[in-house]
Length: 229
Image 1 (cartoon, rainbow, N blue to C red):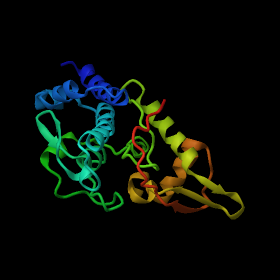
Image 2 (image 1 turned 60 degrees about the vertical axis):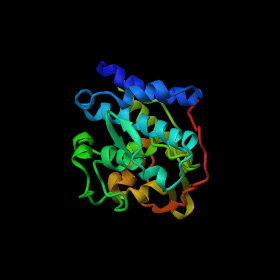
Image 3 (image 1 turned 180 degrees about the vertical axis):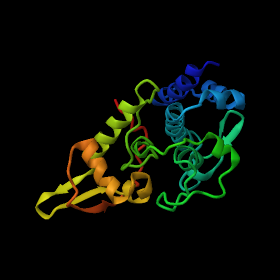
Image 4 (image 1 turned 120 degrees about the vertical axis):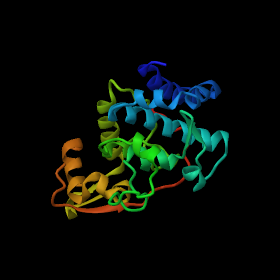
């Protein structure tokens, strides 16, 4: 298996799900890829983000629609077989993509119980934009896109900008801004409140430095198959 094909398979799996086609062959290929070969191919953060974002979004759909697993088990069950090892959605999000942060610490604490496997696969630097790319089947989640290594930065910027534009309410008269609850849940990932304000400046060219930040309740109403057209 070549380096490019591994990333391609993650994207192809997602496309196959969108088209309601059989995913068996792709899942088997991912399952039995030799681990050392797999690990050697995903050497940098770009490739890790592309692969694991696609895999997370694909397997949430598989676990929910094919295996009918519901929350909270859908996040914690280690039944996603990749490269001869089993992972949970939490392993992918909080372990690999968030560099083994403890799930309920707002991003401030490392998970001291993270396995050597997770640590060996984790990104070196947490990219806050992943929070606007991961889809957990809820109405307030970002839509599902197909990520690839050549365009990942452009794609993540676009995902961030689009999500913030749709999920932010400005009350200019009282200097108040209502933002997604994702900012609160993963506060340290975003660089605390100063970081949130910087994100609005860099991503939307909005100066909210003098605004009070309030968090909008998250809608957990199920919304599967929310793919970008």
